[in-house]
Length: 304
Image (cartoon, rainbow, N blue to C red; front, top):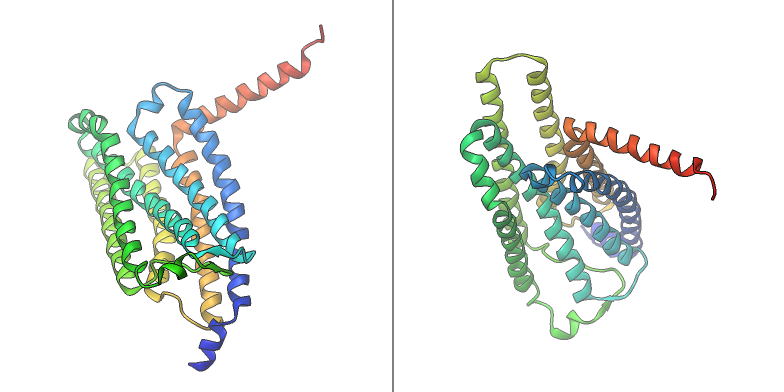
C-alpha cells in the first residue's frame, strides 16, 4: 500500500501518461477533423442533405469528436508541459472536454432513436422529428451542462478560494469523487440503454420483415458494427469510472491501454457513422472527382 502511494506521488509517471495521451489525442484530432471537414462540406453543399435530421445529428456528432480530441490535446498538453496553470483553468478545460465527450454519446443515442423512428414509424415520425430536432439538441446540451455545473460546484467547494487560483504544475482533474462517478455511471447506462433498445427494436423490425436480400444483410452488418463500436466506447469508459484514479505501475499501464482502445474508437467514429453511409460514399466520390477535375483544369489553363 505504501509502495502504491509512493508511486502515485511520482510526477514523472503522470507526466509520461499525459505526454502519451497528448500525442494520441493530436493524431486523433487531425484525423477526425479531416474526415469531419469533408463530410460537413459534402452535407452543407447539398440542400436536401442539410435538412435531414440524421445528417444534422451526424455533423453534430463529428464536431463533438473533433472538439473532444482538441480539448484533450490542450488539457494533456498542459499536464505534459507542466504549464503551471491555475487549478480553475484546469478544471474548466477538463469540464468542457467531459461535457463534449458526453455530447458524443448523447448524439449517438439520438441517432439510434431517429433511425428507429425512421424505420418503424416512417410516416408519423418524419414531420414530428423535423419540428423538434433543434429543441431536442438544445435540451440535450442543457441537461449535460446543468449536470456538470452542479457536480463542479459540489466538488469545487472543498478547496479554499486561494487554492482554486493557485498554479498547479500537473493539472488536477475534477469530477473524480464518488458522487460524480456514480452519477456518471447512471448517465452512461441511461444513454447506453436507449441505444441498445433502439437497435434491438430495429433488428426485430428487420427480422419481422423477413426480406433476406442484400440490403437487409448490409443493414444487419451495420447494426453489428455499430454495437462493436459502442463497446469500444463504453467498456473503457466504464472501467475508467469504476476504478477511479488507482495507484501503481499496473494501473498506469492499464489506463494507457484503455485510453488507446478509446482513442481508436474515436478515430473509427467518423468512418463508421459517416463514410459507411452509402449516400455519403457516392457523393464523396463525385466530390473528389469534381475537385480532381477542377485541379486538372487549373493546371492546364494557358497563361494569358
